[in-house]
Amino acid sequence: MVQKNKPPPAAKIGAPAVPKRRGRPRAYEPDVALGKALDLFRRAGFAATSLDDLSAATGMNRPSLYGAFGDKRELYIKSYRRYRDDARAAMGAVFRDEAPLRQRLERIYAIALDIYLSGEAGPRGCFTVMTAGSEAVSDPAIRAMVLEGLTELDKAFANCFRLAKERGELAGSADTTALAHLASSTIHTIAIRARACVPRKELEAIVKGALDVMCGPK
Image (cartoon, rainbow, N blue to C red; front, side, top):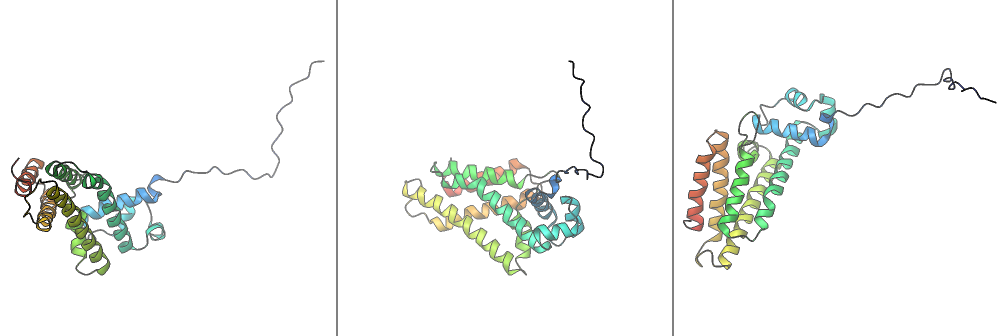
């Protein structure tokens, strides 16, 4: 006996339809949104960046911004922390390396220039030098972060020079603290000049001159 194909069961009348789940827009992902806010603060600074600017850049309305990050100041601080974490991750391995001093410093400055010269709308420079330093004047929390970052960089450079001195790459009379301050100052000056659109070749020439002073002519 041949069985006829049974039609599919009819949907139950009155059964609620299962709503389709919509994917969460990428702009609402905290890490992505924070990166966009960071780009905006680096380009325009704190005062010139409005909540409307941040909303447009991140794709989040004001209530969503407040819910995810707090007020504008909190978002600025989180952006600055993100910037520092990214820079630390980019340079940390080189600072911990035991390559010859000049080679290590050349790599550190090359990474710094990559950071400072990045940006679709033009070189963005350094968050610390270009915007956080200004906010540090009136905001104790930001001031503490800036000082912490400057001290951390000085110590990292000092360790480089100390190791080089122990290995005989520097004279026994070399002042590793003074050299560290000079190395940090070079970082700061190329950050400022990068933001002023000085060409990379000219910035690299400044770095080479500083390295000749700190390490001796190549």
